[in-house]
Length: 170
Image (cartoon, rainbow, N blue to C red):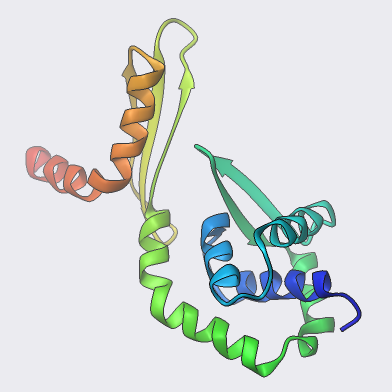
């Protein structure tokens, strides 16, 4: 391996290729930093360079960045995957075995807000299971603080809200 940064990029590509859902910056960082492969700044540099090279794509919702591998990233990984040691691949596999359910749940409840064209804010709350949207709800609130609070609470309470909506509507 000619450059450590190249290995970090390959680890990120390998991780993203092994899951069928986007990973957050925190999830990728959690694995890489917990294993001591590099520091936070080198990891962020690797992520930034992967985005610039169109090997991964990012989407930011409410201060959370989500990453997915692109077709070009998958192709690049096939050329260089052998440069990732079997030990690192095993660590990644174990990480996903232990955390996939929790990571999917973190991604299933998404909320974001935006300023209304008339007054106040609108909060869009979604609850998804794999590729199926169970709830897609937009709520008007009077202030940005209220919108931020709804976004924060949606993650923890979305399942209860969904169950209550079903009970009320059926």
